[in-house]
Structure formats: structure tokens, C-alpha cells
Amino acid sequence: MVSIDLQSRTPIYEQIVNGFSRLCLIGALHAHDKLPSVRSLALDLGINPNTVQKAYQILENKGLIYSIEGKGSFISDEAQLSSQKYSQICEHLKAAVTDAYTQGLPKQQAQIVLDDVYSGRSAGND
Image 1 (tube, rainbow, N blue to C red):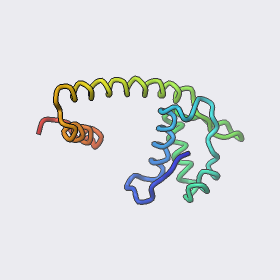
Image 2 (image 1 turned 30 degrees about the vertical axis):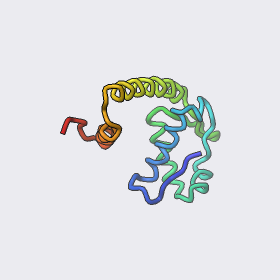
Image 3 (image 1 turned 180 degrees about the horizontal axis):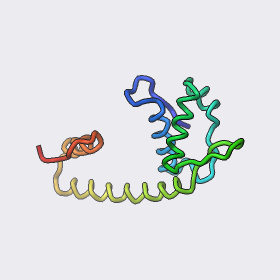
């Protein structure tokens, strides 16, 4: 379901949040699907349950999951809407990349722009 990289600089709770967010976006998880319990996921990943609880709290604050006391945590309807938005974003990105390709932008330059955007740097013309 979700995996973590203990060597990554990204905190484990963020990796869990990103993992579940990604699974929702690609449609692997659907509205009202039940998530593993905090204890179960912590055991599976070999981490502290408090770390999983923190990730679940962040997911809940973002509106991607909801909890029912005594029942567990579930994927929200909002996460399903995010999946539809993901498809739209992918289509826009594909169109932009296709345009860049047909205009002659080298793949390496496109990768630099992507890396800049994802690292938070300006994707200017240096």
C-alpha cells in the first residue's frame, strides 16, 4: 500500500501522507475505502505508531480522510475529487510537454525546469 524510504531526507510521516495522497490521485484508493489501522500500518512499516497517527492527522486536516471513532479512518469524497483534478492536471502537463517538444526544447532542459519547479526555485531562463 504505502512504502517508506528510511534513507530519505523526507520525514517518515510526510512520506506516508504523500503515499496515501498519491494513491488517491491515481485512483488506487476510492471514497470511503478503509485505511489500515494506525497500529497495523506502523507494524507493517516497522515504525512508531505516533508517526502514523501524525500522518493520519495531517491527511484528515487536508480533508483527504475522515475518522469514525471505533471504526477507523476512511478516504473522503474530497480525495475522490482530487483524483479527477489529477487527471486534468496530467492532461495540461502533457499538452505543455508536447508543445515544448514540438518547439524543440531538449529533454534535458525540460527536466531542469521540472526540477526547478519541484524544488521551489524559479524556473527562469538562467
